[in-house]
Image (cartoon, rainbow, N blue to C red; front, top):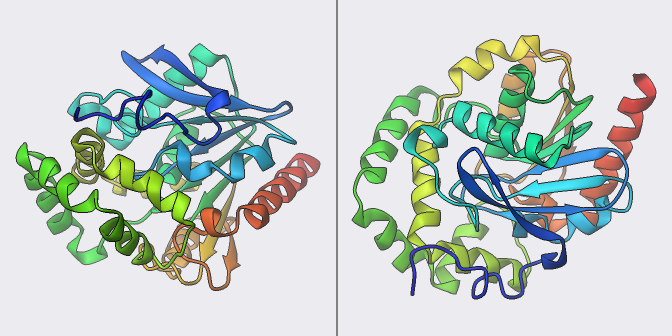
Length: 294
């Protein structure tokens, strides 16, 4: 048993496997899925997830877009980066390099949780120039607000202890434990979805990347720069989200008044996995409106 997910084992029946490819960029070997035709739409998953989280959304969006969905560095089947590569700036720069290799320029970005911060950092840094960014339960404000520094220091401590990811993998790799962890986000997803999360949570390198992101994440510069955003920002909010409280979207809109908030009643942090058809339709409608406005 290896510490990293193996494509011929954990990926043997990976969702949308026919659209998977492996690409070298930014010194990493990436797993990325590209499907469909039309305007380019970039999908960015959140911390501790991978392309499996788009399993039902990607085929629907591919009917109208060229969809590109990578496993972020250290997650899923993409190689782990250096510690600097797990910072927000590092993730944004590496993803930019991947898009350059693929020669794809996103017109629309839909990003979940911490992936939304990566998308915004890329747009603010000029790495992408989309018309629209849809943040799906975006994790855009410091964890714990007043206690953000404490959480960061704790994550750094845990990430620096080599046995910790193994210990977490031993516990979280149990299907029952993974199911409870996912339910704690306020979402109930299919047994198939739980199984894919469980496979990844058994792997110490995947967990180490998630811990490393938490340790390296500093959202304060992003929030400071947010008023410069040119793209339309829509904050899709699951009202039952227990990971990123719905009220956090109002904090973001206070910084960027042009941001729009779209509530999804009764859904949790994994709303796009609970109601993929509804989320796909929403993204397509928002993209059409953004294009018409442009």
